[in-house]
Image (tube, rainbow, N blue to C red; front, side, top):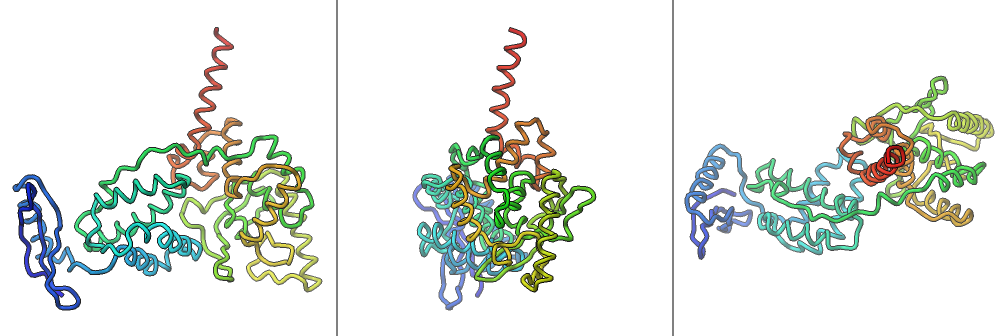
Length: 372
């Protein structure tokens, strides 16, 4: 495989920069690298392209499709991601990326085509958070392709995301609903401790499942959040949390410490009876004395909500409920951000902007009562 030449060709009113190369099958191919209205701009790009080729900073174009390149990216990065992330990435690519791009080659993907894909995703009846998660997968692939000079432009840099209001973050429990859940869940062997950790500690499900007894500091009422336990393809995997910020120490109320002590005593008795084989030494176990997995937890969680007549929100939204109630109680945003393990405070501000607007409205009403 080799690059034969580069040149400019006028097509209509535009000047296209081309690369001619020999592909894996030995056939001569031509690829349009960029298009300009002005010939001088095209000539400048041509000089930059020739320099990149001479310095081995650009590779011979590949015939791989964009979909296959996305899948290849996550296969190559399998050691950097949890099994759950890899599974979700491949599902997203097969369900949303493949139907749009089909057999489009990586080389044929440009900013215009990718913008159409972005617009198409925002036109779907999906939550904005879900759309962003899908686009993050394709963005990551394109960033890597640009880094390796498989493509000439870092395409995501040229994309504009359509504005669409996301109601998903408003899907949280009120104080009364949260109180009812914590009251009614008492002595529920599967749900009591996890639901308290969701609502009173703001932990993610994987962090709750991966909380080890060595991570519990009974003296100082703190939990060390450093592991995720995930269940993929009928196998459990204990891994470190996904980012540096996710590894954190949080203070928890006396109620959680009391529940943890109660659970520790119960598990010690189960071990003495030979009923519990807890290899990872996790805090939360299910009714069969095994580790938590999201599917069985979700089934029990839905049945519990139906029984106590409380509306359903996703388990992850319990964490949002925790954060929302903290903010409404006057907790500063930096503390909330650190408690949740967000990468930076901007993420927290963006996620809970609706709460801040609500507080601003209340503040306006309060000052009116005082001064007017």
